Image 1 (tube, rainbow, N blue to C red):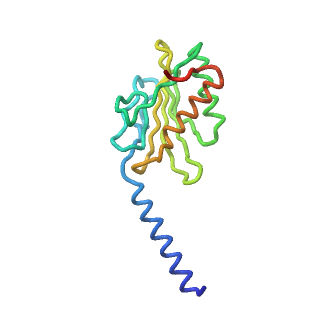
Image 2 (image 1 turned 180 degrees about the vertical axis):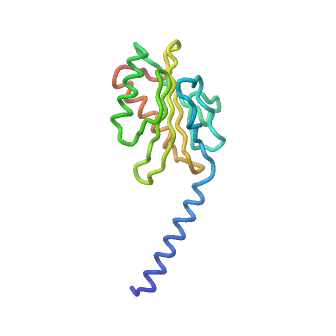
Image 3 (image 1 turned 30 degrees about the vertical axis):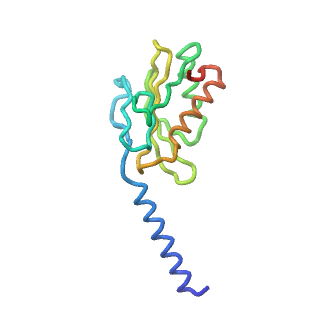
Length: 163
């Protein structure tokens, strides 16, 4: 292969990568970052794009069941924090006694997604939301992430499977 052919291949690959990046960017699901975590009482609804799931969103395409707590809500909340702290893909950016916000970084493409949890002690549940910052589709990553956390909490004995 000549140097010119190699350069042409590199230009084509770069162009294709830019096209893919442009197609992925668009809608954002970022929550308001400067909100005092002590004042949060509800999670935001998802944008119209399919790159967000939330237990607080009634839209079927975005809805995910909240985590149903088994036993002491404070023990479940502590377990959730421990699960997130043990996972290197999460960085907790804000927390309060009932609210937690984190950034989750995808392994391969290093996209940052915003994840939120809201403890509702009285009904015995943890509402949750995960949204991509960029792109239109997340290929189901946000739903898989939250279902994995739910599974970890069930395995820890502090949550039960949804009905």
